[in-house]
Amino acid sequence: MMKSRAKYHLGQVVRHRKLSFRGVVFDVDAIFSNTDEWYAAIPEDVRPNKDQPFYHLLAENDQSYYVAYVSEQNLVADYSGVPIDHPDLSDLFGPFCDGSYPLHFQLN
Image (cartoon, rainbow, N blue to C red):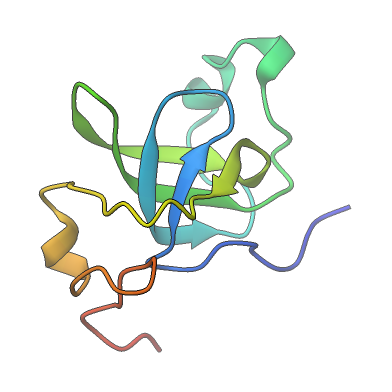
């Protein structure tokens, strides 16, 4: 059964349940919308179901900054109050405020 609503919103800080990285949501796909090659590269025993929201994140870990594509089941909200330092944040969002980042533009 397909889930109809995303749990996390644009500008929200989240962290991966199992891996050591955090990020800011900048886009959401209602269901999986990446390549079959990307999906097949995930080990089968940890491969998420495609019928759930997937989030595009401006992500960071202790070593680098990058863009991540993560299933909803593998994310949790980050309430630490610690901002994300990703260098591309200011292209999309305003300053960190009350645990999230406000969008710089209006959505349709």
